[in-house]
Image (cartoon, rainbow, N blue to C red; front, side, top):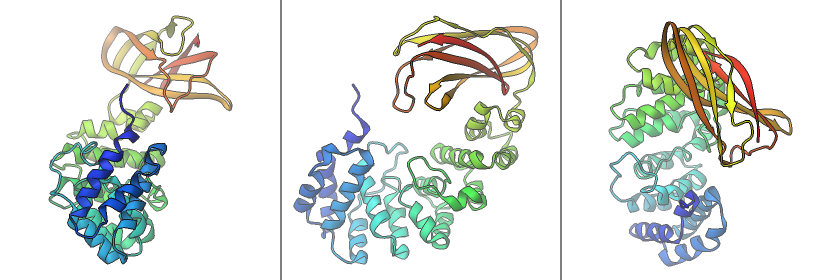
Length: 355
């Protein structure tokens, strides 16, 4: 079984953090390790991060100017790769120290986040500053969008997303995303795919609250950035948003035959196959909608199916397997299950099976 993500932040990585920070000359390494590892294994991921961050702050010198200087001086050379999941996880608590304890000193803490993000993303840590000190934080983010470091440029986009998963929601940007949109316009053609993916995710956040605006921005970005636009509008496309479908050419006269699912009964951990015959002319985008009983009625999830160009009168025997593997975000509910095919925004079916 794969190691749980939370378990990557453990006694070994805490010890590595202690050795690194001790090079700054101001951290009591032994006291830090003892405090940080006490009870660590019983905590979930974000609680572990905060626990280690509190231990770091307790081991640093008192006044924040001295503490943040010690943190920054202790950092190793910037990480050059794009995938920092394992390389930078042990430094997530360092960013959290600045997030929690440096908030009243933006003039010192924002430059520290720029330094830290080159090792472990500061996308969560910047968000309280955007709320508490919006003018200073946005000026910093706009400067970061022109930085020579791809990690700093990514922070400019990712840290200012209105609805960053796991992060504090930016209510002001949810209401008015214009400042963030102006920022990602400068990054849409960034040489790093890592940064461009963040740009797409940022626009995808905007699409949740301002779908027409997101489609308008995406229209300006086409035709040369189709992959980025498809990723940005993925939720709108799965929901069948007419403007998003039209923009990407998912249209035509598509007839859908009977939607079928087999077997008629299935068990958790198994799978079912969904089939239908599509006939017509145009580009058919097919998504699969699985609905199940819940305490409040019916809940559902939409899965990406396929896109296919059909010529006049051509038939497409669509088939897709639906996994019934349990996942924490989608509890399996026994009883009747419903499956629809969403073809260019229109739902067909349902076919049913018993779980």
